[in-house]
Length: 447
Image 1 (tube, rainbow, N blue to C red):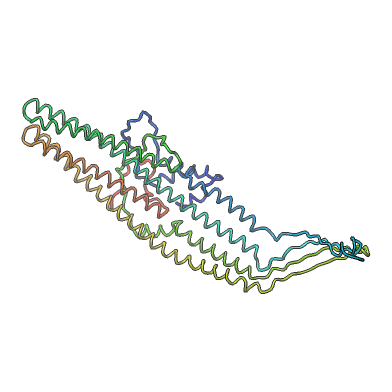
Image 2 (spheres, helix red, strand yellow):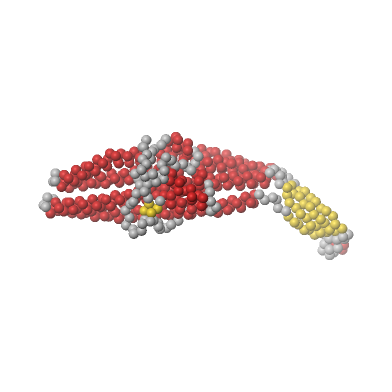
């Protein structure tokens, strides 16, 4: 998937945008459209595809690469230049005494000079810049993948915040119903006034929780919008659901795909760059021959003659030994850093994989076993309270257990999706390739 990010620049950004929707659909197809509560009057909605497009085209960190691209173009032009020609003029034997007084005995020389580069220096310079461009492309790809992963994680944060706001609104509605039920029992003399006071206090807390969740939702939207440079989000909600988490997959298969991550393949590009720099340093050990050719005029005889010369520096190989040693050390260092990066990549991927597995298993258990049981328990407890068989404390405990389980489901599902985004970022490929964008009815079997 990272190949789509090779050309995130002005020249082909339009082509990239045309293909982004399909790519982003696979980036995290588990996020599906579901409305969320919002108090704002606006009705603008952000999609994951739009968020990624905005980030890739407007993110300030990615914009730096435009200037780096221009810098590399300048380096390539400079590296391809041939040795410069120099025009020199020289005057001798004038302004002296006796026969050399004035310019009667002067000699004037006009010469053209340059150097002959030996050892393939020009080709080595061009090769070094070309290798630097390969490394630059890999870094840009890695940054684009990192940015897409961060956009997806923050997008999931917004989806989760919307789900929490839905749950807080539902809890407020339930608290209102509790107050109404307790009021009826209190008026009938079947419950003490203290229970009504406690119910009203819990309603106030539920209202406070809604306001707190609204603030957190706004903060999560802002955290997402700053990725494309907006200091204030221009959308109210995002399309998304925490219902479909996909399958866990096989770790070794994921790791084999992660080896092709630009952050790892860029080491090969860097190694080629260091090798090119070593070749360039080796060419500097070859002596360049300086030459000059011109014409000389003798004022005293009014004659002219051609002049030519060669210059060869001495002991240049010894003077270049330090540069060769430094270039070899830089080249050999790359392989060591690559091995270290591979270990770090495997550890990070395994952690994300395990956390995703835990999130999927937790969410499945909560959704299929815990929440249905707590829902039935709350219904039975409420009925028992209204018939006088249970006290208010048992009813509130059952209600709080259900709400806590629903919050835990949101947390587990969000963690699973965020770790899935990290896995996609590390593997440079969609985690759920069988899902089509917008296939809200598709269900993935949890392995």
